[in-house]
Length: 150
Image (cartoon, rainbow, N blue to C red; front, side, top):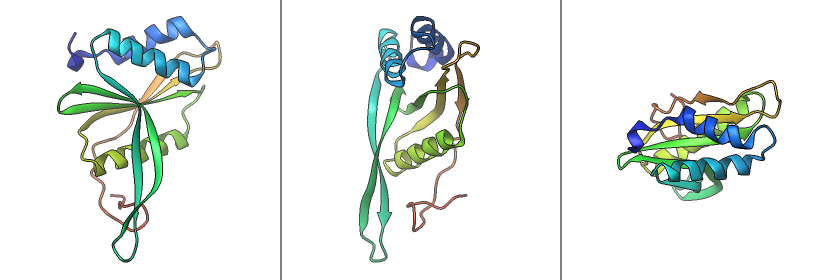
């Protein structure tokens, strides 16, 4: 199976079928990485990215270091960013976190083609779900975050 033909929903379901509702976020992350690898797809776990601040004198400072749960090498020119949560609902803070990751990767000129937040539920009456996060914008520089919202 080539990375371009990855069935993300199938991978999520395979992991959930084995771990169920009782896993920790780190369990789901490790299992997803192992499943991608079993399918011949390279994945970086806990990929480090930085948030920068440029002061009024033009000096660039690292103000935060974050870690992306899974950074999937779909092909040499495209990558998929996955943020995993153990939650029954999608929260706005999850989306903001993903946008921060996307912004950080844009600084590094990483070719992102897909970005998803995946929620593995805690409640027995729920199923895993994912949200595709808009990754198509190219941020512009501003003072506070290194970017300006479009």
